[in-house]
Length: 165
Image (cartoon, rainbow, N blue to C red):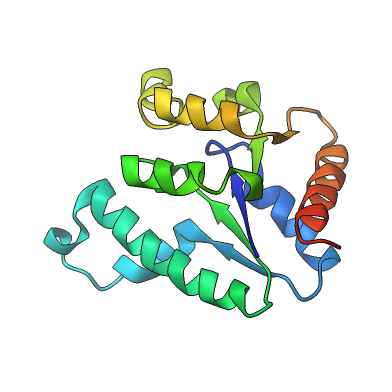
């Protein structure tokens, strides 16, 4: 089974997953942004092709992970906001809502991402598509508390539940 962790940049997805990994032996953890970066490392700029090209490469990565998951190897995928920039990406994840956990901390994101303007965040991470997808996800981890341990425990429990553990 594939489990997807989705949320805006800076919400704490990777931070929480790093703490949950050792508690879930036998589960593979994959950062989709990192895999994408590896895929484009040796490409010419003209080959990258913006968000559509990124999603095509992301789709290939996810296909490989689906094969791995279908033979009994559970995979948790950290889905960066950059992977949610095309209509095809939103359709892909909308079809898999039962396997998605949303990590959110809106105030925290705005405070941590001071390198980006509010307009940039709204344009790229809080679009109507993002808001619709986020609103459709039933499993939500609010990571806005000062103490991350509660969010970590909830994330661990939700992943374990999805994986039938």
